[in-house]
Length: 192
Image (cartoon, rainbow, N blue to C red; front, side, top):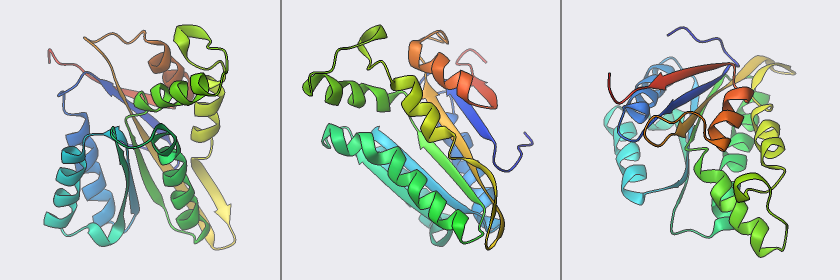
């Protein structure tokens, strides 16, 4: 699948459909080509993050990769900050004139913890009990990816956003929001 540098691509599908495997193979190819790769695990399982780290070590690409991860046992505020920390690291390397490949896994988890923080702070919930500004929060995050001219030359941040669906339902509130913000979509169907 040809992708342009600086593109924002949505990887969407149910659990266990090969989304992470596809992304890990893409990271492997990009890291071997000299691209800085950043994997952001947002509120996932510790075992999954450990498996990804072992994959990077086995394939000898750890020197070109950064893992920013929180588990579901971490505080909601820390999980909420995970994609922002990963994007800030990507911007650091971009400013040095390096191309960056960023994976946000799973951006559907992020709003759940943002909702928790918002409700605890007394903010009124919006659609599907999510804070009313969740669309703005995600669009502001993803707009930071793209192709740039820096003082150190041309550089890009290419973002792969993973969004999990339930039983192939692509009409979820968060999933459709992310669809509208990304340049393209790759759908992983459990029946194929």
